[in-house]
Amino acid sequence: MSLIKITDQPINTDELTKSLIHPEFGGVDIFIGNIRKFTDEIETEKIEYTTYKKMAEKEMQKLADKVLAKGMDVVMVHRVGELKLADVAVFIGVAAPHRAEAFENCQFLIDQLKETVPIWKKEYDKDKIRWGGLGE
Amino acid sequence: MKVKLFSILAEEIGSTVDLNLSDSFYAKDVKDDIKKLYPDFSEILDQSLVAVNEEYADDEAFKLADVTEIAIIPPVSGG
Image 1 (cartoon, rainbow over the protein chains, first blue to last red):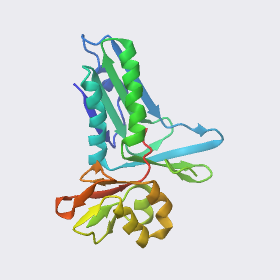
Image 2: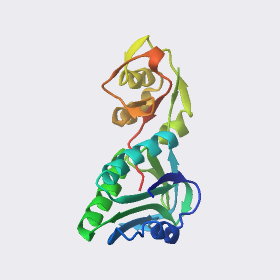
Image 3: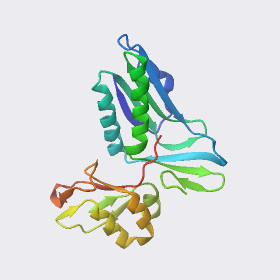
Image 4: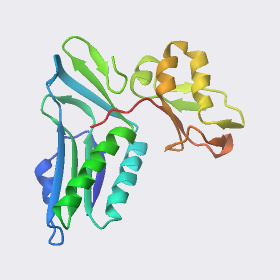
């Protein structure tokens, strides 16, 4: 059963992975996005995510529907609030009959999420605060 | 009409901005109305999209009576 949500709670990757295991799907591809310490020489200390939750979940559902329509299963969970280094910010999982479509659709979902879903990061770096999506 | 703001706009201006919209309007015009009140944020508003009733709608025309919610969506940065 597909699961699409935004949460302010830690993401349980084991539980979400297990939810994608079904006898009809031979391939499960998972993307896990974590809070990274270094971006070149910039050192990040924490990231605060905010969202327009109702619209964001609708946009995530629209993306998921494109993959669900092809007969696969989908999990998309994004965490918001204050996240520390190595915390899981996003979990995308696609279960498909074969690996090629699992890889392809998992990449599609995370790439599109970053383009269209109204979620924003405020990055607390060692030198200053940076807002995601706005450059410097 | 209270227009919802997010991200840097919410932090700098507030979570909503109150606008007097005409009975019919283009979604993108909402950004111009906010620019007039907050010219310092013109550059960010130019990069932002307008969502009406929780759908991206920049180039669409609306009748105010059909609108329940308007939001300004700065460049997104999830993931």
